[in-house]
Image (cartoon, rainbow, N blue to C red; front, side):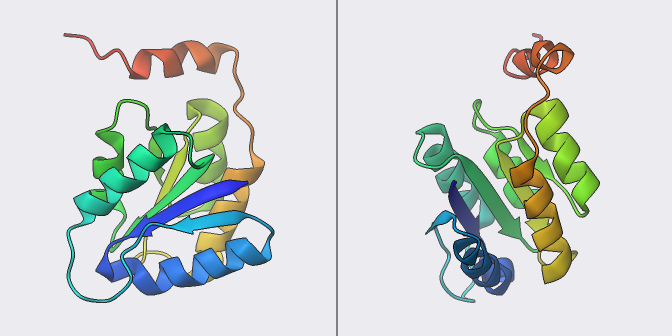
Length: 145
């Protein structure tokens, strides 16, 4: 699977560890930055990841920042993104099954490497459930006025 991954400075170490692990699992991984611990703005990397996934350059995305909150908000500004902030595998699986999430967000200050791997494993292995969920997901891009 083609996976894009991006983070701010607070999650750069987690991003590097996860990118390496994903490659070991046989995935094609594109690291969209940041590449160091110098302070950067998480929206820049969330927007970059969203555009990358929306353009079809990656099948799924992984967004990381200190808490996961800020970057998930940034990713979800793109109308084609359904980014789910999770901290355990059940939520990651249900985000795929019920919400057809295409980006997974996690917080480096909240989640450890083993739990992050478990979340990603669940996220990548779970298909979208379709049926009644498809009707609901279709409404996500059509907010009421």
